[in-house]
Amino acid sequence: MDMVVKKPWLAHYPPAVSPTVDVNAYGSLVELLDESFRKHASRTASVCMDSELRFRDVDEMADALGAWLQDKGLVKGSRVALMMPNLPQYMVAIAGVLRAGYVVVNVNPLYTPRELEHQLNDSGAEAIVILENFATTLEEVIERTKVRHVVLASMGDLLGFWKGLLVNFVVRNVKKMVPEFRLPLNQGRTVTRFNMAIAEGTRMRLARVDIQPDDVAFLQYTGGTTGVSKGATLLHRNVVANILQTEAWFKPMLDKLGDKPLTCVCALPLYHIFALTICYMMGARVGMKNLLIPNPRDLPGLVKTLSRHKVSMFPAVNTLFNALANDADFARLDFSDLVVSNGGGMACQQATAEKWLKITGCPVVEGYGLSETSPVATSNRLDTTDFTGTIGLPIPSTEIAIRDDDGRDVPFGEPGEICIRGPQVMAGYWNRPDETAKVMTPDGFFKSGDVGVMDERGYTKIVDRKKDMILVSGFNVYPNEIEQVVNMHAGVLECAAVGVADARSGEAVKLFVVKKDPTLAEEDLADYCKQNFTAYKRPKYIEFRDDLPKSNVGKILRRELRSTT
Image (cartoon, rainbow, N blue to C red; front, side, top):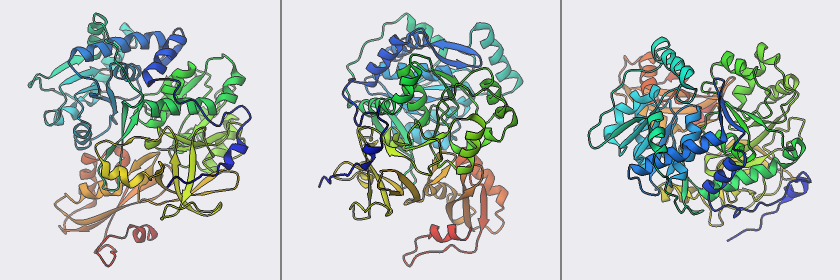
């Protein structure tokens, strides 16, 4: 039954923000990007290590890469994995893959071989664009996947000839950041350097593909109740909708700035849905310059980059806001152009928000979303100056319902599961109808797994998580995945993973273990986890116990373990 949702939030919208957007304005994400590239052709699209690319450059190289991929015989709808940090090659690759009629599969470049193999096989990726620094990971698994075409990027590819040579020499020979690798060429597999693929593609003609709104654009991988990472299937219409919704929410700010070009700090990784939509997609829509930060963990390097630019937009998670707010050199920068600081991915702490406002003069505007919602679902108003402690209001064409376990709406002020309905909500999980059925309601709402309270104005505050997911610096970590892998260690009898509070990352993973082998040491298990999990998933704490609390049917009670930490 389709329940009528009350929309008190509309009365609290800024006057310039429309309650709805025309989600049918573009037939595909490609159509929207093509228009944006043409409109802003002469503007700077990206700056990376002080080298600039215009939108015209991205446009031309995307055509070339798309034509090159088509020449390899990939059919419409084929999946192409992208495994890189924030580099201009990433922006080119996303546009090229979509324009050729394929599906982008974003991959964390720090994945272990186990994690990469699962994602390549689950998505059925036939090609991959990967930075050479991570090729050794691919080497370990490629023969057990469907990947037949590898495009090898290097750090200096698009930095200009001489600078590119220098950067590549330093990366490979001085910093030793490219482990030796040898990718097999059997089974008709090709391995081509990124710049060579672009050069070859410029001599080819891109065949324009009939892309429909319901065609798949991205597979954004996220965890699940089973612990198996699964792809949120984002259609072209989902992502187009979220770009237009975000643009509508930004309208008061954009109107105030007029035609003044914006500069955005893209420190969040482009493989993460937050940066993908806000920095790249919405950025292209409004002709925004992206400062691409390949390694945001290098705080001195990030601050040095920021010192050379006057930034107007800064999307980040609480951990990055906090690290910068406590950096003396950052505090001395010029923030006169900074008009919006978008907080998302994890809860922004009040102390961090207040310190950021004091230093920059720009408040952190907190929002909320998930991979499954492309991602933005709610946001505080951009003219907010005080820390609200809420995730804001539903953005245009979005409905939020707070529901109990029986699917009934609860009264204002009472807790319930945050459920989201709107054109940005995914089509489902890739090839997993069972998992899709668990999160989608008959009336089209996505059940987020987060518990929230909505007030009479329509502002929602997250109070708890219904699921056991652990949120580490804005990245989802699912206990079942950790437990399944750790339980495969010969010295482990059983284990449980929970999230514990962490001053730096919001939450950290704590692992409780019952030994099978009495000689098992903490450092042995830590080394095992390092081999099998990317950094943010690795347990920060390991505690050995004689037994674990269980229900009367034998289920490990994670909640009891959390209460003891």
